[in-house]
Structures are given as C-alpha cells and as structure tokens.
Image 1: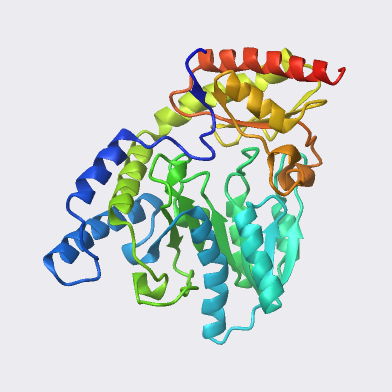
Image 2 (image 1 turned 180 degrees about the vertical axis):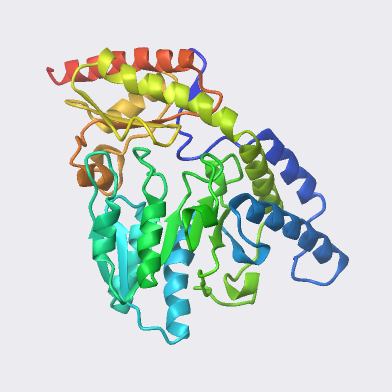
Length: 385
C-alpha cells in the first residue's frame, strides 16, 4: 500500500509537535492540584494561569471569562445548560431558545434537554441548499422571552460559514444571548468574540492541533454561566472538577501556533479544497458536492454519490490508504441520514466528508480522486449500476 493520507481533520487534527513538547514540559512540573497552596500546587496554578491568559487573548476575552472543559461537547453543554441555570438562579423567566437545523448533535441534544426537562420552547430555523441560515428568519423567530440563540460558525459536515454577525445584531435587539459553536473555526479561521458579537463561544483543542479532551468556553461581557455539575468551587463557579493542566498548557500552545500560522495554513488548505470541489464531479458521474464554494471553511469538502453505500465507501477508501468520514445513515449508529444534509434538501446517500490539513497537497488530492473514482465505480458495479 502507498503512504497513507489522513483526511479527517474536521474530527481531530494530529497533535502539533509544539503542543506535544509543551505537554511533556508541563507534565514534569505540574504535579500538584492548582487549587492547593503548596509548592506543587502553585507550580500547576502558574502554568494554568499562563495557558488561560494566552488562550483568552487568542479569542479576545479577559482571562476570567475563559472556562476550560474536557472538550467541545462539554463546552457546548455548559454554554446551553449553564446559561439557562444562570438565568434561573438570577430570577429570570426566559424559556425560549432558537437553533438552526444544522447544529452539531451536541448542541441539539443540550437544547432538547432543556425542552424535555425544563419546559423550554424551541424554534428550529431551516437553511437553504448551501446550508446557510437566513438571519432574517432567525430575527423573525426571536421573542421577548428568548434566552439564547445557538448558532455554529462553520458547519462540521459541509463547511458552510453562518452569518453570525447579522444574527448577533438581531439578538442584541431583543436582549437574547448568542452562543456561537466555533469548534470547527477557532485556530482555523481568525475569530474574536467581540468581532462576532457573541456572548458565548465554544471551542475544541482537538480541532486545531491540541490534545483530545480539552475545550473551552469564552464569555463576552453579557455572557454568564453557572456550573451544571457541582462538587467544588473552581473556575469562578463555572465548572467543577480537576483540570489536566499539562493538556491545557499544550492546548494553549497549539492555539498560539495555529494563530501564528493561520494565514499560511488557511491558504494551503483552501487551494486543495477548491481543487477537490472542482474535480469530484468530474471524475465520477452522479456526484453532488455540498456547501458553498466561497466564504466556506478552508478545509472541509463534502459530497454524496448515488448508488453507493457510505460505510462501504469509507471502508474501501481506508483500505486504499485514505482516512475519511461518512455522515450517511450507513455510517452512523443512529441509522438515520445526516440531519445536516436532510435540512439542506441534499442527497444523503453515499455521503463523504474529506477534511484536509495544512500539509495536504494537490498531489495528495489527485491520489485521493483516483482512488475515489475507482472505489465508487467498483461499488456501483457490485449493485449493477
């Protein structure tokens, strides 16, 4: 087999070498609990403070407005549930939420928990064929009792970038909060909380070359959350539980490197993304490419192929040396087609997401296209197509 190519960066980036070095250095020093007053605790607390300062600066918030979590999923749940809890404890009566139809399942699950367990009303705003939300439709869904709008920055399946700034203006008009799920964008697209108009922003270190199981929630001036799990007082009562300080330190370094190299990496990925988008429907017939060509995530390409099983497609491409992901019903445990593609009115069968990194070349893309054409042709032949 020829050299393998990893094309699933939207799931998790390989750990950046600088982050790996930072983890090793921190692990040798941060042996104590940063909440303790002894020397080992103070050393861990100093590392944590430096990591927090650097990361907060990277997304444009104060140090005390950043909360570390165990990953993007926990950060999202803290943004959704923690905001509702903060409002309730303050005597608020807002019990209405707005989400888009293409949010990550973590957002939809957290919102649904508020609906089922606490009686919240939820309006789901649809998208057009490119996966884009109409900000006027969001504005029309807002009410006087809307607590928050939950809207991703870049879609995790098709790469569509949402009109977050316009939605932020509509939210501010009625006093609703805006939570931006930026797990696919932080470190890959230049973002600052204030520039977006966001009140809450969530991110995952695994998406920009940091360690797995590290994420964070950044709060704007109006954002406020209260811990949804209790047991000890940490991070300003916004989250309980110990932190993996070496991993947090590594995540901070990964973000610094990502921001330093952002333009170079983004340009390199965009070149490959556009090449793949153009060539995919040329090398194979009956292929539908999803999402917009311009103003999209620089590394995500999604396409569906008629008469092809998504799980088989991923398996055969893996055998050919390419790590990719399918969002089709055949590749998910739920047995349901991708809710993102369904909302877009797009072809769901034989869905494939290719997400490239800064080291992916056009030559890698051409090798993938050759393998894709061969695999699709073979799979279609097996079913008589």
